[in-house]
Amino acid sequence: MFDHKEFRKQFPILNRTVNGSKLIYFDNAATMQKPKVVTDFLVDFYQSSYSNIHRSVHTLSHESTQLYENTRQKVAEFINAPLPKRGTPQNIVFTSGTTDSVNLLANSWGEQNVKAGDEIILSVSEHHSNLIPWQMLAKRKGAVLRFVSICDDGELNYEQFETLFSDKTVLVAISLMSNVLGVVNDGKRIVDFAHAKGVPVFFDAAQAVVHSKIDVQQLDCDFLAFSAHKLYGPTGVGVLYGKTELLNKMPPWKGGGEMINVVSLNDFSAAPSPFRFEAGTPNIAGVVAFGKTLDFLNEYKGITEYETELTNYLVNRLRELNEVEIFSGNNTVGIVAFSVADIHPHDLTHFLDQEGIAARAGHHCAQPLLSFFEVNSLNRVSVSAYNTKDEVDSFIEALKKALEFFAR
Amino acid sequence: MNDKFSQLYQKVVMEHARTPHNFGELEDFTASGEGDNPMCGDSFKVYVKVVDGVIAEAAFTGAGCAVSKSSASVMTEQVKGKSVDDIKTVYEKFQEVVNGEVAPEDADEKLGDLLAFAGIAEFPVRIQCATLAWEALMEALD
Image 1 (cartoon, rainbow over the protein chains, first blue to last red):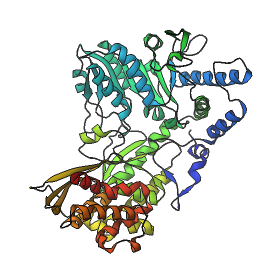
Image 2 (cartoon, one colour):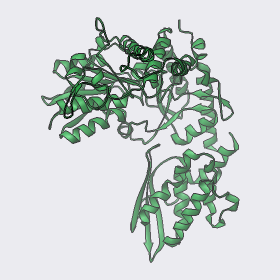
Image 3 (cartoon, chains in turn yellow, orange):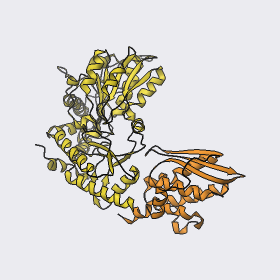
Image 4 (cartoon, rainbow over the protein chains, first blue to last red):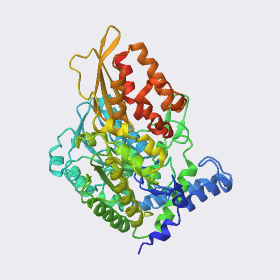
């Protein structure tokens, strides 16, 4: 049984006030707050073990390297990636975030495998981070992007998805969960169909990793990316999972220290994955603190069930208000997008902020999706395991006040 | 609701937001300009008819929050009959007010209803809401 009160206590920032009211943090899909064990650990690490990694034989370097590589192991376990008998998991690459992971894939795998006329399948609900890198690649190569549509309830249109494949299709790159609608896509169905056509699949799991259990072996996806900061971890750390044999075939994208085997004045040979993709000194403290974050999360069971219950409560309370139109479908966890009659989202979220409520208005880095709905802005509230039904009630009361305020 | 917030969403702002003046495309405009706020998706197009260096008519289309829409509405009212040079001066004075550099009570009275947006200075992230239509206008006049 998940003890949300105990969980909430671990986040000191939730005790602060904003504009005279107790903070209600409902912008979790943008980024999450950090537990005290993680921020304490960051300071402690810098004060006790910090050094550069992989390079030196001295004790500090050894300790930092151990912590860094242990985190790679923890990440692999967290998403059930296959582990090697010994040594570092080659299928987990550390990046600076989901955006960096997608750019790595588009520039390395894309550069090698995509040619003029080839087709990449995305969806209309992608975050810009899983859209622009592919647009840039397509422009460079003369490739074509094709888009899966969504149904009225925000679910992917799987029938139309299947019609998009041709003998030119080289990749499916789709989010497992929309950052605007919170709809969870059927990853297994996508992979099964694509693989039957011989097409590899990349999943943007930036949102999905927060609200569902990711098992890359069960999904059988070829690549998957997510960010630490959306999962209670530090900023500046991301993950690209890839099947080891695929990663080792891909050329390096960024050159520099740490990613090489042998270097002469005119040439180099690349180290195997993951090091060939981690040029330069990485975000060492961020990565090891992410390891601590995963330890913290592993202590709690039932987070997804609690978040599902809380989301359902939020949706039901929103449905009580006639002025509210909900854009998310039934199959959502954590994220709810909605509009309120006669109140522009920017005005509403500003009002809510005056009540201490952090919500979000705008296009949520998904302009094509909003165009699809023929709106140019939506409200989004996103809850996490440290939020409560009481906070949802306060939010609904604030919404009622806003309706009165703007009707005057 | 706190005073600063109510001050921002005062009556004149809400009235212009609800029933904007000069909303729609001008049929015989001589210039137009666009203003987009990528942060929130607000987007306006401003049309002007300039005759002998004077703005004879001004109008706008687009969508945005109450502040940006009412600002566009008040702006299109205020600029009519003014010379292009005068308008640039007015915009400069308006910017001083919305950025909080000049207190509304010290500002030029000629700003009229534009002073209703002085309260935005308390909310720096929203200043562009008040200036978005002006950016479109300046593009049209350039």
